Image (cartoon, rainbow, N blue to C red; front, side, top):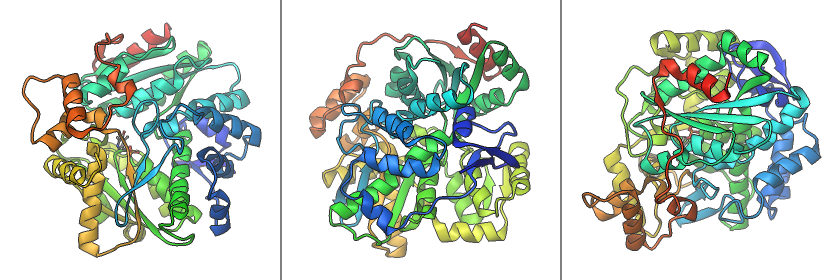
Length: 497
Ligand SMILES: *Cc1c(COP(=O)(O)O)cnc(C)c1O
């Protein structure tokens, strides 16, 4: 199977090349030329199997230039016993009739990004051996909080790689910041920027496509790659868990093979929900893909009206990993829905970068209406949902709470009672202040992060994951904060070139 660019269909690369390169030279994203099909017997063959076995089978459909042994080595390393706090890796918990929570935060950094970022370093170093042998791969990351830490943890001390993370100084939770600034490893570096996530992401995208920077790296035996969800190697591992969740629902007697399910995803950069779209396109029986946003509801408006307009107020919310106004992965969806017309994508993305706005065609809009439902939820309703769901016996983080609320609204509006999988994207202790505030009607004044953790633990009896609890008292290693114009210089400094 070959991959092409959403902005230039003459591009044809292998999956290893797509993963090593991260983003196409034309600024487009790599997409598979065709989407592999699965049927009910494929699903049957995965029921009763481990997550590793499921991942092997699904990945081999997309990474056709990796040998079966290579794929096995990659997934066995990524999901090795002890790395995730559940032996199921991504367990499904039913919290009410029809409402099934897919816990994607059992990995080392307590957010769903681990599902892909534990695997990406294996996929990338295997790809590099096939394609660019002797070069040092430089991973640049823009993060709204969770990607940065998960990428640092995945790539720390991986031979042949260096990683640098940029995060918005005032746009991440205290726990997220501490997780990143205390990161261990010889090949890692972390820098705050004055600005929001979109500034960080745009800065990184600019560096990626800057010829002069690429040449300077080349001279030094280095090349860039991306660990953001623009990299195909981030997306493909995420397809696995939707198929795996479907198998688990069969195993738990909640559905029969062939039954439809809905999928609800708290969405920012549109990567996680796009993986669910690929699973549906492959043949997984998914009825509706439900896109949940916080107050930054650019996607809700887009999916309902067909007009993408980022010219709006940016809100800093209690679900910071979704504080995004430019959802990069939407480009991949639009490419698939517009008849794979690269000229159309260039036009729309050109308008987005020039005017911050574009309108899709009627035919694409109709397909989107058939595939997706969308809703949004502000901080107040998020807090209410955390409190209500806690009363029912389950403690949600802020992002997952947005999804739960949007799902409840969806049920009310449609009366649809189809079994539903809600992607749970973070452990509640990553956002202790907001979660504590929700279950206790406010946070006591003058309390710091770790006394809030303790209050939340004593109130709910839910344990704080050890890797978060032990951050208490750790001194930050990385304290730089730069302007977005200075990001290139920071990169050179970190690389010593
Ligand atoms: C990254 C993230 C999201 C958004 O996922 P996308 O793939 O960017 O849409 C949602 N919740 C949490 C906790 C995250 O870390």
